[in-house]
Image (cartoon, rainbow, N blue to C red):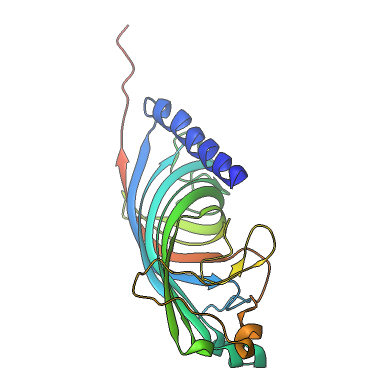
Length: 259
């Protein structure tokens, strides 16, 4: 947790340190919105399932800092879900029958590296499109509704606030002068194993499902069901955000002072 929090502070500190002074010389700022889907990978679904997704939407501000570097701050709201029944090749997942849905509200900052000279006045050769890669960090607020088929469909509602590191790829293209469109795929590597209300505690022990809902009764696991409470993997949970975006570019021309 300490490492992740330090990374988040450093990342946002870097963005504010450079973005604010850059407003003096910046030529192009963008504001935009995106729609897409979120996917989950963790103890319930240990492999990435591209078609097991939930809708999501985002809004962002981007500044094209140099011919190669863009800085972006983004907020996203969406959902993730997992279901043991979707792992048809594994009898253990089929028998356990655990499932969950969760809502996510995240905020993050990211640094993009553009492979082509995109939206810049710093070069005689300017492309109207470019692929890019990005790295970032942020935090999220998550509410999880988990259902345990193996113990009479008990429902657990939990809230958590994980931090994460982000890594991804994208493509953006100029469209109609002051408009851009783009597509992006990014992974969020969280610092928790409990997005799905099932996982391992920091000391390596199995963490029993908990609930922040007062209406959920305390349940003692029957011995015959204890084997189904074992998480699928010791890796931290993660999720992905894939989106299509449209953004508007503000031109800001700075005239030199009179001599």
